[in-house]
Length: 387
Image (cartoon, rainbow, N blue to C red):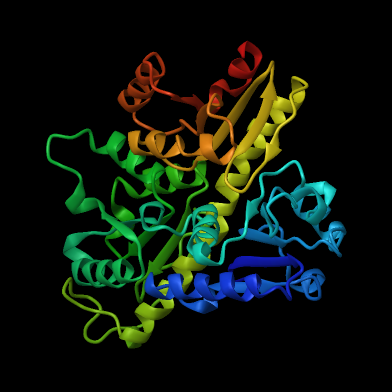
């Protein structure tokens, strides 16, 4: 199955705002080098046929004074699946009159035709399509496939990816194994150039184990004459033949044909869509599950969870990958989005396979006066019990 990003338009989709936002979105993704084919548009009329609850989605609901109860059955389904929804309303004080009651717990945004880009950015951010969030890890042996590795690096950078080459990017005198797991934890997709010599590498099984544990998708480019290994249940194989190459496939300088590189790029995008949705759902789902066990009630907004607890508003932002200081800085803007300058902001993250020193650093920051704190996955229950 090919996985695509789902753009869902509900409510008064005849409103010109719908076409304006949609046009702005495709203009932006075109500038980013993403093909339009990576997206599928879903409306109420094709929802039952085309919607896939395991694929990443972003929902625009367009309010209307005359039809504020439109598509509520679909909204119920989307909310139960944890999909990101932004209510769009059109009159200054009309939110409660334009937006269905089922999503009135969410923060809406007043439409401004001069600020279409902000509506576009909500979707790009939720789908994690902004460049800083699109990370790939290419694993290969320089003696086998340096030419293809560099060829893919160039092609994927043009498609708005931040690409990591393990043989070049890990400094000497570094704990390679620990650094490998840490870097993998921050990637969306692992691409393995599966040459005859690669499967004998001592790091191959480590990479696969780490990827499986973190639900990171793997694209395996299988060289001619190499048997496909069934060791990775998240793997998407691309079987190469001698005809896939411009020259001899057995030389490290060999290159792939342009159409093969284009196909690999499409496979990578599909695997990324599948696994980013799974990783975020797993992280958010576990946090919500722990909260529910303790009688806490969370509301899911487009990229965060919010809770009113003991007179305070808590905002929980899932960080898929390795939390950075810049993530903490950026998270401060959510105070404005939740319309509460006194709200408390937290990044929730999966600490598995992240370097111990990095986790110590995050824990140390939690003891400081920074306005944004972090909560590691293995301490969800403990944190919720103590706050």
